[in-house]
Amino acid sequence: MRPSGRANDALREISFTTGFSHHAEGSCLIKMGGTEVLCAASVEARVPPFLRNSGKGWVTAEYGMLPRATHTRGDREAARGKQSGRTQEIQRLIGRSLRAVVDRAALGEMTITLDCDVLNADGGTRCAAITGAWVALSLSVRHLIRMNVLKASPINGQVAAVSCGLVGGAAVLDLDYAEDSNADADANFVLTDGGGIVEIQGTAEKAPFSEPQFLELMGLARAGTERLYQLQRAALEAA
Image (tube, rainbow, N blue to C red; front, side):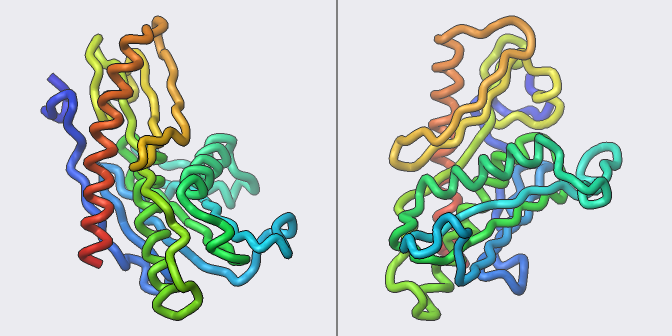
């Protein structure tokens, strides 16, 4: 029995609250169980120096956690004067994930930055950030079309992410902190609705896991992200 009482192939309860940030061009608060991440999209009419005069836009991300998002208080990275390696790795992952489903030539020379701030952490914060950021990005593009800045959406697919792991010898979907901290192996799957793979991060915490076990986790991730795509679309329809 999982600590949450869920079936092995069940996601946590998930919700999207769109328009949560009043001033951003697009935003949503995503809740995946006890994990809550605020995703806000900001649009700028410029690109990084390496893209100037290229005709292509840029989509990037920043990620952070509030000091009491976890069981004990964490220092603010701004107070330390630098970001941790974990923060840098996660925000680069979010940016890569979103760029995988954006036609940057169709976007034009604009930058869309996704700020993903973890309000409460109970496992899977990077997966929630990616899944919620796609909704915020889509809302910002909708805003640009409404303002006649863009004629059509440069977004050419959906991207979502979910964790899977081996806990007590069983493959399970969407780990919360209690499971993640005791897993025999865990992996994060970033997948697109077209069947593409953006990134898979998998680690054996104890003994190595087998290829059949990996394929079982992959199957769970495919099913889980299919449900996430449905919820993303529903959030946009309701916005």
